Length: 345
Image 1 (cartoon, rainbow, N blue to C red):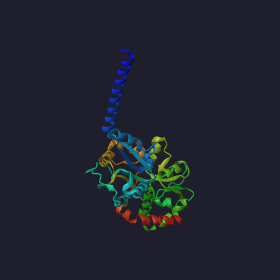
Image 2 (tube, rainbow, N blue to C red):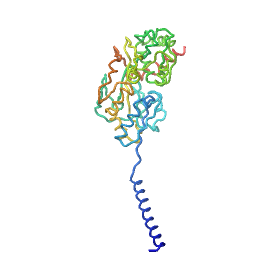
Image 3 (cartoon, one colour):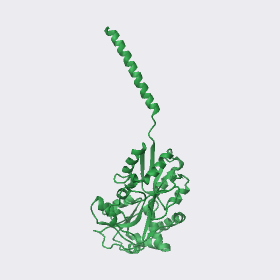
Image 4 (cartoon, helix red, strand yellow):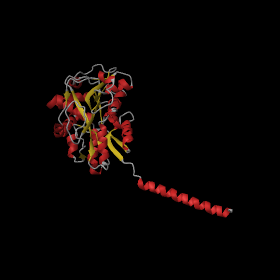
């Protein structure tokens, strides 16, 4: 065989190989489907590198063959405001980070769908029955303080309100923050019609009011103030992660306001089956195991192991305070207006 014939034969074989290659590649492209993306609106501390989001994302992606995208916003109220602003055009498949104080208003938007879990395996201190909102954690609000800096630890809400002005606290805005709203309801639950007068007294002790929890807690840990509104569980983080017990939660004689955080499926989701699959996963150990030591709250579902020893050292409130969702929905705007007026005088 001369060189010309060998060259022609080689080129022919190359053409066949290339044709086969392109054909197989085209077939693969034709038969493969894009990986579905599940978009979850939540709060920024949930999505932080030290929060539960990254570990939960990895765990669910391992079993779902999907791409989980957490979108971090300032706080629970911000999540609801964003959802209302975007309406049916929202890219969110799930909202995660609302609480019982927001569920009536969230339901009224008409933007959320049933989770389709007949009997959720919940572990909560109260009875729960709701076909749309599913709890994933719970806890009590508390004034957390630096025991190396605070001389007079308040043992009641009254003591906090009437304490010395020089010992400051960082609070969160009830218009944008679920802890901020929780504290406003705590004040209202204890003081009732005298809440406005109590806010006026407390105002002199407030260093600043931040949009969300993360900004407030950062100011506190940087030493800007010896107290911050947070949770009874917050000291567990410092015990476990930083090996220190200097940050503590004050136990208030009147009781502590409770928070139950919830998630819900967005009605306009492009992936309804996947979204509901995540909701079921949310109550499993794959999700719940990350709540105590990454979200620093009590789990609302099954975990694979008991709570860490540090949780046994935490403050247990003498009483749990909680308005019904309907009471909050009816009065929230009025009570926020009362707070604004008191804080601006």
